[in-house]
Length: 277
Image (tube, one colour):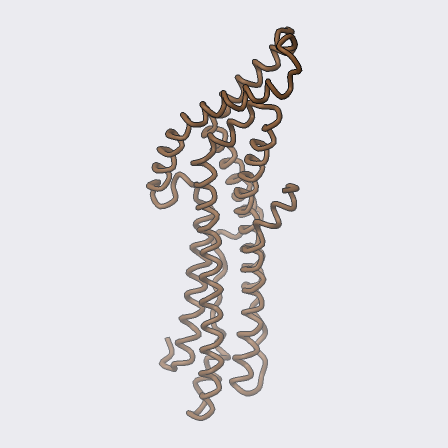
């Protein structure tokens, strides 16, 4: 690495970005069960088992409330076709609570398959790292002391922006895992709402919201693939003063990073709009 402070600072900032981008790539290919060695998932499974008892209690409550609201009289309940429909609703709702974890894991596998297909179709195994061009390194190293002063300001501002964008990006991906765990842990309660016809919309909204959180991973992966394509064709280094070269290069690079981070941050809203939530 160059001994020049400006070059070192820019290189370190880009290394942080590349490290966080690689971490995002790794996290998107991980399932919630394997995240952090599975320690978090074991806690979620334990909470899910505890809330199942509450879910069964709410199942009966929602079922009775639904029967009272949809049936005009007890005579309607005695009709075979109506009684059979109520029985199937109760049985399916109970199955949703009992086997809800299996259903949610099946959705996870489907989305992980979508993410894998995006990776295979793009032909990118690992995200393309961003490297400081040799032309800029040479121009910076040839600057004198006074000429380097504006470069320090440009480097500090650019490095800070890159560091902040890296943190925002990785926090967004970690936030997705938190949402998946929260949805999974609390699943028995909203799923019990399927027992009553007036409350079944709660269960439907829950499943659609959970699917939307999972699909965020596919959108983020697609954004990373597009950014890697941009990174493989880095910004053109213009000729001129070193400060102007660095500012132009860093500005265009940050613009591309902003697009990626913005896509990551907006993945939740984008998927929810697609699903009509």
